[in-house]
Length: 480
Image (cartoon, rainbow, N blue to C red; front, side, top):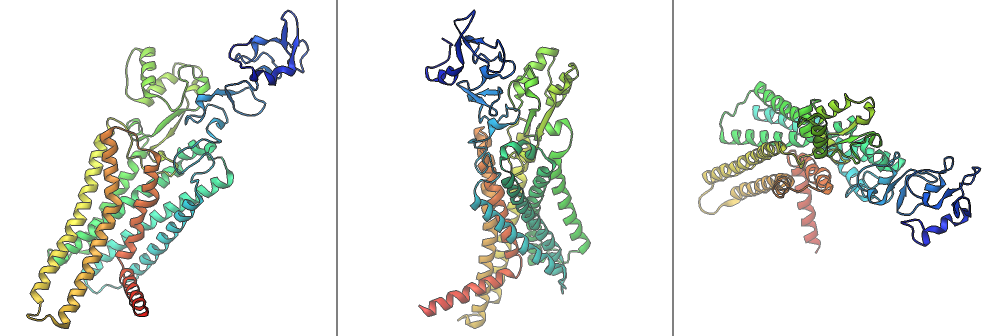
């Protein structure tokens, strides 16, 4: 009896079991003369049928990497987010890569792909129209000229967000045609194109919010008549400075230094894991790596890349330490920044990042509320005593319309960014790892929502839309 076999597991081997010598029974290796091997050699992990390998095929409790192959992995290593088979098939099939992706598709749901595509086209179209209109606009006052510069910058950032969404949909469709996303997943997430998409997303999202803060601040200054005549050169300098800081922030995680890669990187894999006797699983376990390094060299280091290079330098089989890096923007297949990363030193960056977002949002809210207060005071000065009359009614209607618009503008910013900040704080406080769905919701819904609403709120489209809705509602009521 061969240990580990159940009665039913023998059936597939029965046709090749014969009486033999010196063993009572042997397994026939088929096309080889004198090819019988003892039954104890079946499924023992060593190929005894040298030409056919039949003694190691179809064994119970194993996952085979391909049909008629002796390459296999244990069942508990299937769908463990680490490719153990040379062809990576152990992470394919029924494996769920994350919440929106599957082993076959970058974005599994056709509905999500369709909606994201529609959102991308809408964002690109609306912001492109506004950029063209603003570019050709002739401004009669300094205030309008100043705002025109800010608005062009805003719409360009939102246009980039639309291009990001369209790019992700395009990559998803290409992978859908090829099939088996699991075979391309690590290559895609570690690719330069994914990093480019991540840069687009980060610079567009933060650039848009920063520009809105500049717009709200400038509008408040004009309303309060504080340095109302801002020079064009000063405005261009502000826009250039904010854009430069935003681009540097988005490029920082891509700098090819060990310290930056260790701080911002997502995962590091050994490409030739089977050749490496020190590690049996990907991604690289930092604790295990430090332990092996300390044992080999009797010294410590916190630099993962230095450790790997040191180990590579003392072996003739240097390929065993070849690595594949998944950077900051490759945290998921949607290529967005890994702000939920777990790392001791990264906590300082999270605090600075969330504080900056809170300050920028606070600037937007405070300045717009200041505009409403200033407008209310102005209304009291021009109110006609006694019965208000037609003039006052018109002014109050305009004030109410502006108040609603400002509240909607503030609300849209809060809707997009407050959940994001609270989610960062939540996962930082509990010390847990954010699931991929969290990243994907912000990448495809919350943050891009601003890029759809901004050309509506910061152009004449809002007035035209509200007028159309009011006329439609009035006609509906009349027809009732």
